[in-house]
Figure (tube, rainbow, N blue to C red):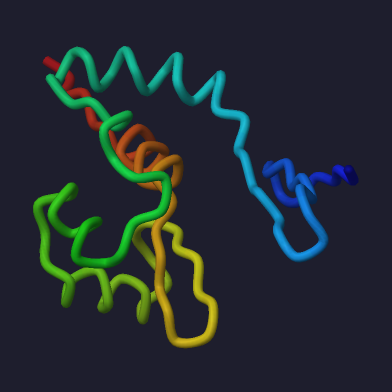
Amino acid sequence: MKSLVIVGFKAVTTTRHRLELTMPTTKLKTDLSKLLADNGLDLTVLPPVMTPPETAQVLRTTVTSLAQDRFRGVGVPYVKYGSRIRYLRADVGKYLLDNHVTPSA
């Protein structure tokens, strides 16, 4: 079994034609779980890889808005392979955490 690291992911070759990706999210889980628990959200129930409609539902926005964000180069990071667009659960969580605003008094 071979193992290599790709941009924070650990890729493990399980068979000749299969590659599994895992992402270490210990730090993200700690900060994010506190933030999400405070706001009543639980990302663990989401699939690890989401389609634009699934992501739009989680973020309470539209698929069109996500497409516009991709076009402008802003918003949630995404993965594109061929014509398919996918969002990683960890990226959605990090996006929420990075864009969390605490109002000052």
